[in-house]
Image (cartoon, rainbow, N blue to C red; front, side, top):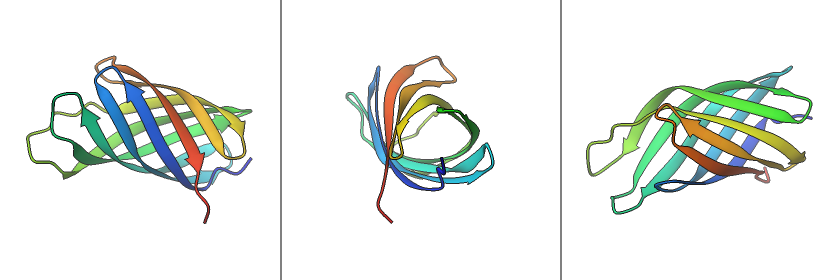
Length: 116
């Protein structure tokens, strides 16, 4: 299964919701790329962030870990914890799973392949 390409990203977690886009490159089992998203936390102004990710795909299991981030836009100071995503490839266009940040906050995400 080739995962290289653009994916729509949505996630719900304990403090809000995230929406954005994942751009992946696959070489063998290795994955790399970046995810750009808007984070909407309960009772706070939204902000936009970019995380650089690396990971792997084995059988139908997918793992991505962020190793660096940039704040693209924010009206307030942001303290951000890097994320990790672990999911299952349901079909050629859908990955669903759970996420966890460095603080232990968990969420549920879906990546859906975008048409080129």
